Image (cartoon, rainbow, N blue to C red; front, side, top):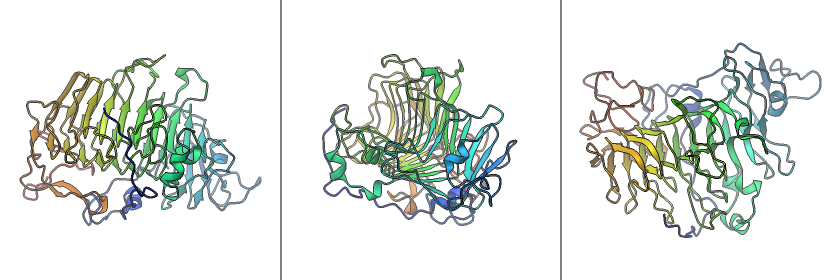
Length: 477
């Protein structure tokens, strides 16, 4: 791909955060008006609370005191930092985080406001979640690399939290001035999963679930993992990340996963996420050019990098809505075993410097790209056939971009007829109008049982294309 260094004239705040009621969606409130196709009284995505547990409940309250009376055993005796609770967790424990803003201690180069190193087990994961009805916020000082870091720990669940980075307080000029230096200020990630520094490859984290979180304005990546396995990212809202990092970050990423076992089925899941306004404005230090800033990327699973190992599992990327990201909406790169199914992409490749396809595979093997809707930015590439081996594109709808590089026998080039498409999620409705060519024209092959809202795709019927199933008011489904 051709990279050109083009930067916005005024990039202090390249996007204003939409006034979308993300917290209502995350906390399971039953009515959200006009938010990406949710209507009054509709069921929203469940909070998925894991409070029920076989282990202890540990409480954290930002304004709690310290000392022996604060052992985390009750709301009144709560710990006052996330790290204090994490340091004593055992398999099966649930850490209940109460209202307040949680921040690191400001030590230069610290790994995060919460650095998780203690593991659960297969039957007893350790869960970090909001106290019922609460909306805690995790942020960082300019000295911290991560909001939540999972360092070599396994069987961990992170859910129902807001992670708010500092990107809205930073500016392009200052970030560009330090583009050759890795700094926490401009490269901090929201949630990062990785092995301990200097550890053997097999020491990577596994069985990590990140769901129902709001992750926004991190100058580095939103949610990402490297050298991990069994990684689930589900029902999150991830926006306005990757602006100022020198590492070519994206909204949601997995990079060089490990094989925690010999399983060959689905082990990575990126499902039901709303991902928008993630973009790279600073050149990738490795090449001195702009790169990535994608919505979702599955990166380097072939094992072709130095010391790499080919990933044995498969990755499912399904039911996501990706809007106005700087690079692709969704793509695999140097990856194998990736199934990209029933996603909706709208006007991605927002960066003037990048011409990434909207949804697709690059230099990939054994992948399926099915039932997606790609509403492409005018003049930008629609998809890619570049150095792919055994990659199937079929049953997709493409509209508005350049001619697809590859099409399957059932792909369509047509207006998908969204109800009300828009770049701002609060104003957008990506459900299908009557008469949409996406209705009843997909394939059952690999199609998820439910859609983005949790509505069941009727068994026995040909599924619709895209992240939303069409609701027929006359037939009750």
